[in-house]
Length: 80
Image (cartoon, rainbow, N blue to C red; front, side, top):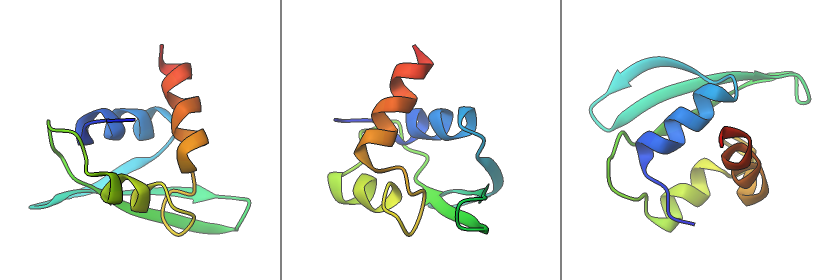
């Protein structure tokens, strides 16, 4: 499921993630997760090219966004 960094950023913002700051390598994003009572954080590369599978997998992992592949598909379906 190829997706660009910018498309992923747009999906995360629509899901309630906030951009905290821009770094040379991407955008630092945060979201409060009441299910774990903690702030989730991730850095998404601000690329127009498709993200590498390992990079995307790490961003979607339980330690970062916690979305997984199913969560990404849900966001894409809700978007349009």
